[in-house]
Image (cartoon, rainbow, N blue to C red):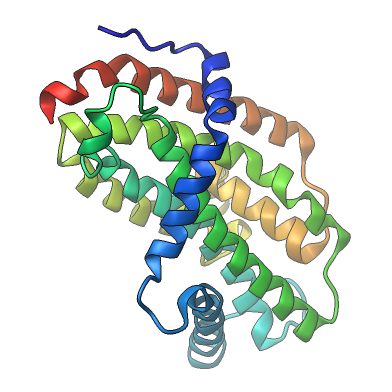
Length: 273
């Protein structure tokens, strides 16, 4: 039986070695989502616009919600700040919720000894990242129209998001493997991502919580990424690089642990399926 390396170097080498395959499958994944529709890929642009308009109306007009960043905060400011949190959580949730079915829905790949199953998590991530990038473009366009500027710190967003990218990949590999042996894991991930939606400061600033609860939200890595993303995208603040470095190490460990688990357990996929 073939042995699969769980070395962290193999995690990077596998991506580089199969980068062309990953790009081809990711392209097929993105195009397949809108295959047969009249507007095609245009929906990936119109959907976030529609959602941004709805958020603005519901939270600013109906609930009259305010973030409390300044006395002259406009109705649309809250919607833009909220949209950042929903964008990042959406990327996280799509990858995590799809992970348990990655192997079970691609049984034909499991039977092929030469197919690198670990790339399926990359394909899901790249597809989700594409749609997140479109939503980000809508967000930046809204900022330009409403506030007439985008802070230069927005260029730091990829660095801020890097720990999250690593964490997502680690969890994706973990849940993809568990989904083969424990079919209920798909229900668990849906509940998990829903809890994270409300426990990651998506709908409120962390400072709005009583001080005794703020610590528990701040140690949530997703809440940290959302808060720092808002700082660089909207408030023009440079992230805390020391905390970012800790998060990066934590994300890298998660990625390697998830990859190692996947490599150690993939030998039994064909027997179970």
